[in-house]
Image (cartoon, rainbow, N blue to C red; front, side, top):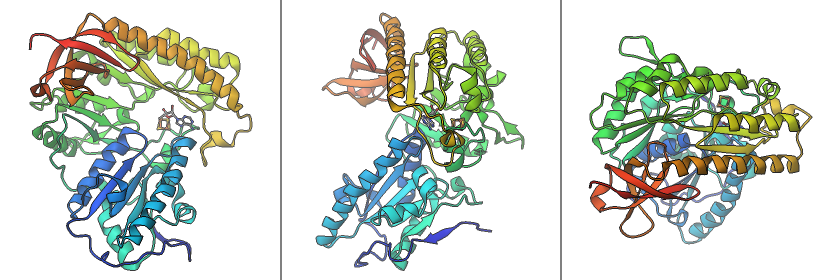
Length: 471
Ligand code: 5AD
Ligand code: SF4
């Protein structure tokens, strides 16, 4: 049964549009997809683009040139969500200009803002023709046709019973050497600050056979490095060929057997789901890169409990020690929130102390942002904006120093670098170190897609530079 909800936009709020030439998709149409937010959105945009290619859409170079504009949105923090509306303002102007020139433009808002706000989006931005949640984008071609035929805005934000991945076309050829592959979606952890359990739904893992097929397809088209994605990727428990649930560690070891696949990464992990096998894989599986993104969010146990993180600061320190025992050569990354409701100065100091104890190669840090519908958003002891700003500045100074120390320790070492794109200067290529740092080097064009030894000679705030050795 299809429990999908397709609601009509409020009466009178549908965008007026002419349907001249808009009845069928057909060849020659162009789509422009703008992606906000996390790597999973990048993956989703690629899959959408592939699904639309089957319907005759080619990529547009700009919004002005697009018959279909898709904004793939992020709802994680307030700023991210607001960006969508300012972009829609711009899109409205372009749509009107195109209309004056006799060309129609369809506008779709997909992703997590679509999921969270649904028909509200059409009410606030009548330029929008389609609102589609992250679990329904495989139905985009069909929804576009319906919206055109029925001349009204459509909203599809239900969590369908059918599996999106079973309804997407097989992967097309890619021209890159690195790729994302979503293996798990959703989250049941319900951290009190986070919208993900509401926008992406409950945890779901793709079958091993499906992941393997997609990985093989990517490798066949030249991909050398795959990053396995999931909101809570290490909670992965996909059905294996033996009918049992396989863990992420087992999946990684299985994929590592694919010839031509040189590197495997995964993100994002929850400390509670780092099981022994996954930790052991870091020491045993050479294709698993020595980099781990492991958010801890806050250093004070009272705040961690209020966040419903299900771990203490000591648990995190102990876990990192166990992972480093398995793989001493590990770059750690994390996510941190400052100014969670009720966070006192001394509790913030505990966050700084935890960073000092662990030592991060890099990190993402945020001011707490109230998200509608989340438990923490309802707490009344919200931290003033200026306190959050001051804490964030202190935190980032410390994190930048740690990142610089990690980069400095790479100078003089020779690191294997996977070159995946041209650099800014002619004759220069950019690649990734095992620790996910960008590395610039003078390199011949045929180095693209290859892993070459680079002696690191210097570093900047966000990258390393070096010289290829023995090429
Ligand atoms: N406010 C600030 N940061 C948040 N994050 C998630 N929700 C919020 C929020 N309400 C951060 C967390 C998470 C990362 C993806 O975004 O650190 O790990
Ligand atoms: Fe959000 Fe991550 Fe917590 Fe899940 S584990 S609720 S995705 S912060």
